[in-house]
Amino acid sequence: MGNRILVATRKGLFLLDRKGTWGKEVWSIASTSFLGSPVTMAFSDSRDGSLYAALNLGHFASKLHHSSDNGKTWQERTVPVYPPQPEYLPKPENEFAKVAPWSLVQIWALESDGGESPGGLWAGTIPGGLFHSSDGAQSWQMSRTLWDRPERNQWFGGGYDYPGIHSICVDPRDARHITVGVSCGGAWSTQDRGGTWACTAKGMRAEFMPPDRQYDPNIQDPHRLVQCQEYPDVMWVQHHNGIFRSTDRALSWNEIADVQPSAFGFAVAVHPKDPNTAWFVPAIKDECRVPVNGKVVVTRTRNGGQSFEVLDSGLPQESSYHLVYRHCLDVDASGNQLVMGSTTGGLWISANQGDTWEMISQNLPPVYCARFVGS
Amino acid sequence: MPKVLFTRHLQRFVDCPPSEVAGNTVRSALETVFAQNPRLRGYVLDDQDRLRQHVVIFVNGEAVHDREKLSDAVEESSEVFVMQALSGG
Image (cartoon, rainbow over all chains, first blue to last red; front, side):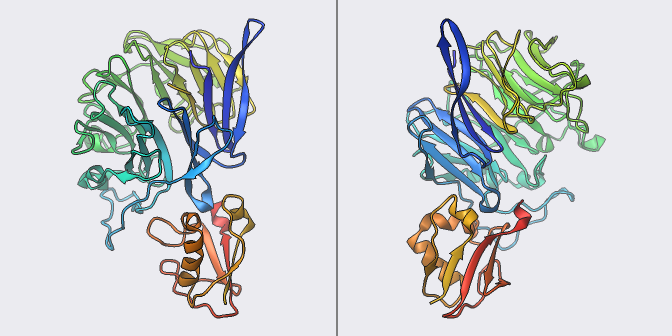
């Protein structure tokens, strides 16, 4: 069971520890870092215990910090830097999209590269970049093969001005196989560690596009993409307008319809050992991003999406307007423990796969990322 | 020599005391500062070496005109202020 949680928020990074006291285990905030500054992503490297925190300082842009002493002290490391921008940039093929600058706006994803060496990292960024570091963020190399794909010119921002990579799934069987989620640019996969890429969002459906373009793989908005660790052929997506599942490593996707109380949301977590078990946090719909009927619930399927249970024990059930962003629902390596953080500063833990929840705080800043250390 | 000063807000994140440096443009004066303090560059300039969108520089009280190349002239007695723009929130 995970005993430590990283909670990145709009106003700082919080580390929570679980400690036993006379037989009762209690979660509490063990340390606070970067108080007052937006922390857009946090990552713990299980290979050496390092922590990474990505900040977005607004005026002074994105920064990346590293800690080798569990967050007691931090040192600034290097952020990914975009290559020299050509003098002429083509207009995006979708008229409503903005021309993306060749300059880092935000680090939106940080993951292990799946290798044995500590500090081997992938970073997903806005606008639309994927970067690799082999030295713990002291230097970065952009995956130009993805950045230079002509299809990137059809991508557009979803929630942000520019498109971005928010999900990076490295196949535990073969670290050369990587699938990334792009809002809005579908899902893209490589079998050769970024040598070549293919758009792998066949079957996804975009309600926000005209009818003849709704199944265009390259403009889909997968809010979050996750992969089952023991059965990596199975991947789940919480999409802008629905839930999708793949059983063939993202080659094709099936929509799971009629999910109550709603199929709209941002977050999804999949059980690390059971590909049929996944959790979601529904909101009403795109135009109204609050819980249905003011009740915070988690939906859980145990049969690959054939049916869903609505879990609400311990969660606010009256006049509640929490929204759970894409990086704010996580399951630990055992598959039993879940953490969930909200835009309204709520943080909940479940020790029994979501059957019951315990509120850890309702007073945090808006949560951008909540994840178990070592998960 | 021109004097370069940074907003107190920036000093929260990176050490950047006032300094007097050689240079006859905003760019050359800043480059001298960055040579002494490389970490500071990424706080002020973007990946393409342009002034960050939400940073503004004043020379003797007047905002610089050339935000890309920073070619605005500075003189021996100039004061160059690097500030955060209110557009950044």
